[in-house]
Length: 213
Image (tube, rainbow, N blue to C red; front, side, top):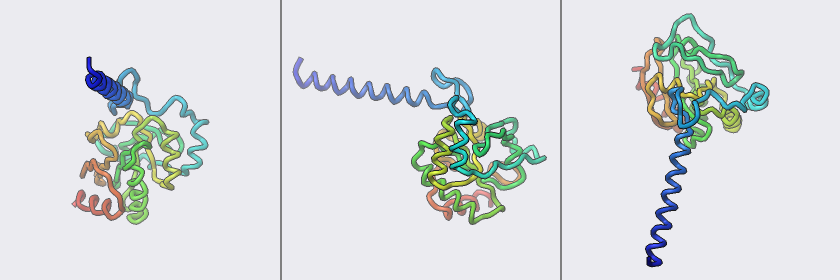
Protein backbone atom coordinates (compact mmCIF):
# COMPACT_ATOMS: atom_id res chain seq x y z
CA UNK A 1 0.00 0.00 0.00
CA UNK A 2 1.46 3.34 -1.03
CA UNK A 3 1.76 6.36 1.25
CA UNK A 4 -0.78 8.18 -0.91
CA UNK A 5 -3.31 5.38 -0.51
CA UNK A 6 -2.82 5.32 3.27
CA UNK A 7 -3.46 9.09 3.48
CA UNK A 8 -6.58 8.73 1.33
CA UNK A 9 -7.96 5.99 3.59
CA UNK A 10 -7.16 8.05 6.70
CA UNK A 11 -8.98 11.10 5.32
CA UNK A 12 -12.01 8.98 4.38
CA UNK A 13 -12.10 7.48 7.89
CA UNK A 14 -12.02 10.93 9.50
CA UNK A 15 -14.81 12.19 7.21
CA UNK A 16 -16.92 9.13 8.00
CA UNK A 17 -16.44 9.71 11.73
CA UNK A 18 -17.46 13.34 11.43
CA UNK A 19 -20.58 12.42 9.47
CA UNK A 20 -21.52 9.82 12.08
CA UNK A 21 -21.11 12.36 14.88
CA UNK A 22 -23.27 14.86 13.02
CA UNK A 23 -26.06 12.34 12.52
CA UNK A 24 -26.06 11.47 16.24
CA UNK A 25 -26.34 15.11 17.22
CA UNK A 26 -29.30 15.58 14.88
CA UNK A 27 -30.90 12.43 16.22
CA UNK A 28 -30.88 13.88 19.73
CA UNK A 29 -32.90 16.94 18.68
CA UNK A 30 -36.63 16.55 19.45
CA UNK A 31 -38.61 15.86 16.30
CA UNK A 32 -41.52 18.14 17.22
CA UNK A 33 -44.03 15.29 17.32
CA UNK A 34 -43.75 14.53 21.02
CA UNK A 35 -42.68 10.97 20.17
CA UNK A 36 -39.35 9.23 20.40
CA UNK A 37 -36.29 10.98 18.97
CA UNK A 38 -33.40 8.54 18.77
CA UNK A 39 -33.09 7.01 22.23
CA UNK A 40 -34.67 9.97 24.04
CA UNK A 41 -38.31 10.99 24.38
CA UNK A 42 -38.85 14.62 23.49
CA UNK A 43 -39.44 16.73 26.60
CA UNK A 44 -40.94 20.14 27.22
CA UNK A 45 -37.83 21.12 29.16
CA UNK A 46 -34.81 19.50 30.81
CA UNK A 47 -35.10 17.73 34.14
CA UNK A 48 -32.53 20.25 35.41
CA UNK A 49 -34.95 23.10 34.68
CA UNK A 50 -36.81 22.90 37.98
CA UNK A 51 -38.79 25.89 39.28
CA UNK A 52 -35.95 26.69 41.69
CA UNK A 53 -33.32 26.47 38.96
CA UNK A 54 -35.39 28.66 36.65
CA UNK A 55 -36.13 31.36 39.22
CA UNK A 56 -32.91 33.29 38.59
CA UNK A 57 -33.05 33.14 34.76
CA UNK A 58 -36.73 34.13 34.87
CA UNK A 59 -35.90 37.15 36.99
CA UNK A 60 -33.14 38.16 34.56
CA UNK A 61 -35.36 37.73 31.50
CA UNK A 62 -38.26 39.65 33.12
CA UNK A 63 -40.72 38.42 30.51
CA UNK A 64 -44.33 39.61 30.38
CA UNK A 65 -47.02 37.07 31.25
CA UNK A 66 -48.41 34.90 28.49
CA UNK A 67 -51.83 35.79 27.05
CA UNK A 68 -54.79 34.74 29.15
CA UNK A 69 -57.19 32.12 27.85
CA UNK A 70 -60.23 33.54 26.08
CA UNK A 71 -63.75 32.11 25.87
CA UNK A 72 -63.14 31.63 22.15
CA UNK A 73 -61.84 28.07 21.49
CA UNK A 74 -59.21 29.54 19.20
CA UNK A 75 -57.36 28.05 16.21
CA UNK A 76 -58.62 24.57 15.39
CA UNK A 77 -55.13 23.19 14.79
CA UNK A 78 -53.92 24.23 18.25
CA UNK A 79 -56.84 23.02 20.35
CA UNK A 80 -55.82 20.66 23.12
CA UNK A 81 -52.17 21.76 23.11
CA UNK A 82 -50.91 22.91 26.51
CA UNK A 83 -47.38 24.23 27.01
CA UNK A 84 -45.54 26.18 29.68
CA UNK A 85 -45.26 29.95 29.92
CA UNK A 86 -41.57 30.80 30.14
CA UNK A 87 -42.29 33.83 32.32
CA UNK A 88 -43.68 31.92 35.29
CA UNK A 89 -44.07 28.23 34.44
CA UNK A 90 -47.87 28.40 34.25
CA UNK A 91 -49.68 26.07 31.88
CA UNK A 92 -51.00 27.75 28.75
CA UNK A 93 -53.93 26.48 26.66
CA UNK A 94 -52.38 27.60 23.40
CA UNK A 95 -55.50 27.83 21.23
CA UNK A 96 -57.47 29.85 23.79
CA UNK A 97 -54.49 32.05 24.63
CA UNK A 98 -54.08 33.05 20.98
CA UNK A 99 -57.78 33.52 20.26
CA UNK A 100 -59.53 36.75 19.38
CA UNK A 101 -56.61 38.80 18.07
CA UNK A 102 -54.16 38.80 15.17
CA UNK A 103 -51.01 37.02 16.31
CA UNK A 104 -47.46 36.86 15.01
CA UNK A 105 -46.13 33.56 16.31
CA UNK A 106 -42.33 33.42 16.16
CA UNK A 107 -40.67 30.00 16.48
CA UNK A 108 -37.04 29.93 17.57
CA UNK A 109 -34.34 28.23 19.66
CA UNK A 110 -31.54 29.60 21.82
CA UNK A 111 -28.82 28.06 19.62
CA UNK A 112 -30.22 29.46 16.35
CA UNK A 113 -28.00 32.29 15.05
CA UNK A 114 -30.56 33.96 12.74
CA UNK A 115 -33.08 33.82 15.60
CA UNK A 116 -30.90 36.04 17.77
CA UNK A 117 -30.95 38.67 15.02
CA UNK A 118 -34.67 38.31 14.42
CA UNK A 119 -35.94 38.45 18.01
CA UNK A 120 -35.00 42.12 18.57
CA UNK A 121 -36.78 42.95 15.31
CA UNK A 122 -39.88 41.15 16.60
CA UNK A 123 -39.74 43.17 19.80
CA UNK A 124 -39.34 46.39 17.81
CA UNK A 125 -42.32 45.44 15.64
CA UNK A 126 -44.46 44.81 18.74
CA UNK A 127 -43.55 48.24 20.14
CA UNK A 128 -44.55 49.87 16.85
CA UNK A 129 -47.82 48.04 16.28
CA UNK A 130 -49.06 48.20 19.88
CA UNK A 131 -52.09 46.18 20.98
CA UNK A 132 -53.46 45.74 17.46
CA UNK A 133 -51.30 42.62 16.99
CA UNK A 134 -49.78 40.27 19.56
CA UNK A 135 -46.27 38.94 19.04
CA UNK A 136 -45.73 35.66 20.89
CA UNK A 137 -42.52 33.67 20.69
CA UNK A 138 -42.22 29.88 20.95
CA UNK A 139 -38.95 28.42 22.18
CA UNK A 140 -38.47 25.04 20.49
CA UNK A 141 -35.75 23.41 22.56
CA UNK A 142 -35.95 21.69 25.93
CA UNK A 143 -33.21 23.91 27.43
CA UNK A 144 -35.48 26.51 28.99
CA UNK A 145 -32.69 28.05 31.07
CA UNK A 146 -30.68 28.81 27.93
CA UNK A 147 -33.75 30.40 26.32
CA UNK A 148 -34.33 32.72 29.26
CA UNK A 149 -30.68 33.72 29.41
CA UNK A 150 -30.65 34.39 25.66
CA UNK A 151 -33.72 36.64 25.91
CA UNK A 152 -32.15 38.47 28.85
CA UNK A 153 -28.95 38.95 26.87
CA UNK A 154 -30.87 40.35 23.90
CA UNK A 155 -33.13 42.52 26.05
CA UNK A 156 -36.16 40.99 24.32
CA UNK A 157 -39.28 40.92 26.47
CA UNK A 158 -42.09 39.21 24.63
CA UNK A 159 -44.58 36.58 25.84
CA UNK A 160 -42.78 33.27 25.35
CA UNK A 161 -44.12 29.72 25.24
CA UNK A 162 -41.75 26.88 26.15
CA UNK A 163 -42.37 24.06 23.65
CA UNK A 164 -39.43 21.66 23.72
CA UNK A 165 -41.54 19.02 21.97
CA UNK A 166 -42.34 21.39 19.08
CA UNK A 167 -46.01 20.50 19.35
CA UNK A 168 -47.14 23.89 18.06
CA UNK A 169 -45.02 23.71 14.92
CA UNK A 170 -46.17 20.16 14.23
CA UNK A 171 -49.84 21.08 14.67
CA UNK A 172 -49.55 24.04 12.29
CA UNK A 173 -47.46 22.17 9.71
CA UNK A 174 -44.47 24.49 10.02
CA UNK A 175 -41.38 23.26 8.13
CA UNK A 176 -38.62 21.96 10.39
CA UNK A 177 -36.50 25.11 10.13
CA UNK A 178 -35.80 27.99 12.46
CA UNK A 179 -36.61 30.73 12.71
CA UNK A 180 -40.11 30.47 11.32
CA UNK A 181 -43.10 32.76 11.75
CA UNK A 182 -46.81 31.97 11.62
CA UNK A 183 -49.30 34.78 11.15
CA UNK A 184 -52.74 34.07 12.60
CA UNK A 185 -55.82 36.12 11.79
CA UNK A 186 -58.12 37.31 14.58
CA UNK A 187 -60.54 34.46 13.76
CA UNK A 188 -57.77 31.92 14.44
CA UNK A 189 -57.12 30.90 10.86
CA UNK A 190 -53.57 30.68 9.57
CA UNK A 191 -52.88 33.58 7.22
CA UNK A 192 -49.30 32.65 6.36
CA UNK A 193 -46.43 30.41 7.37
CA UNK A 194 -43.07 32.07 6.76
CA UNK A 195 -40.03 29.78 7.16
CA UNK A 196 -37.57 32.66 6.92
CA UNK A 197 -35.60 35.10 9.03
CA UNK A 198 -36.48 38.78 9.40
CA UNK A 199 -33.91 41.41 10.29
CA UNK A 200 -36.05 44.54 10.72
CA UNK A 201 -39.46 45.53 12.05
CA UNK A 202 -40.25 47.00 8.63
CA UNK A 203 -39.83 43.58 7.00
CA UNK A 204 -42.14 42.01 9.56
CA UNK A 205 -44.75 44.75 9.12
CA UNK A 206 -44.79 44.23 5.35
CA UNK A 207 -45.07 40.45 5.73
CA UNK A 208 -47.99 40.78 8.16
CA UNK A 209 -49.78 43.28 5.95
CA UNK A 210 -49.38 41.09 2.87
CA UNK A 211 -50.54 38.00 4.75
CA UNK A 212 -53.80 39.42 6.11
CA UNK A 213 -54.88 41.34 3.00
